[in-house]
Image (cartoon, rainbow, N blue to C red; front, side, top):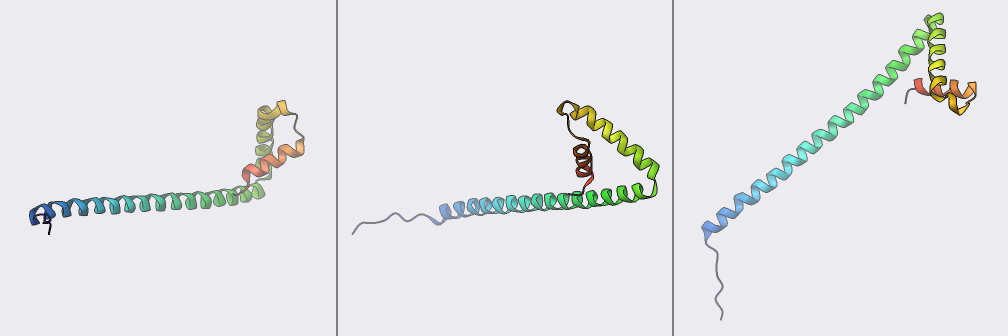
Length: 105
């Protein structure tokens, strides 16, 4: 019959704390990851709500200040033409681009 070497209790106690700290570190990383994902989620949600609010304010402003809205639209159109003028786009396409720019995503 062969004898097996049995580890001493002291050596086992040194191993157990190492395992527990490693598992705790894993949970800490998991908690940090979860908090990070939560921050990203709320940031995206906040961005979506701000876009909706901006679209609402623009719509209200355009309805109440017709002259300002027309001036703003013509300025946007001229800036867009200077940017994409080399592509010879139709006026309707440029107006659609401006509508798309202000649309809530």
